[in-house]
Image (cartoon, rainbow, N blue to C red; front, side, top):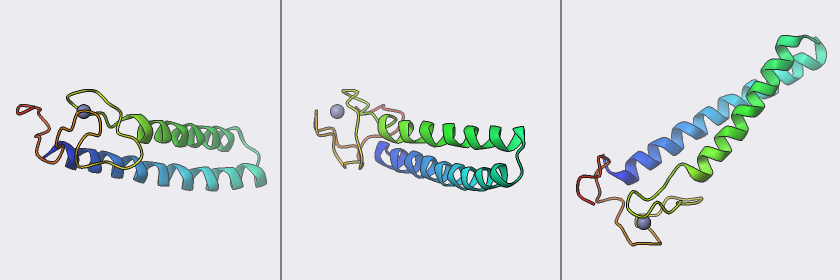
Length: 96
Ligand SMILES: [Zn+2]
């Protein structure tokens, strides 16, 4: 598995987790409004914290293995800073 593939997989997993955190946020928020309870309030704030953590992971979790440059927003095929081809480098970084 190349670095590019592992970044795409990681981003997909984070987005999937953020989707479920958002669903939990909606459901627990609606339930806590209609049925005030500490557990629903706790679930609401926990899912909100999960959304914030997911946004942080999406922004800063993909770094170039050579120069540690943060690859923001979309994942490029090559690093814009050092030019490392991310689709040709193995995840174990043996051929950097
Ligand atoms: Zn780089």
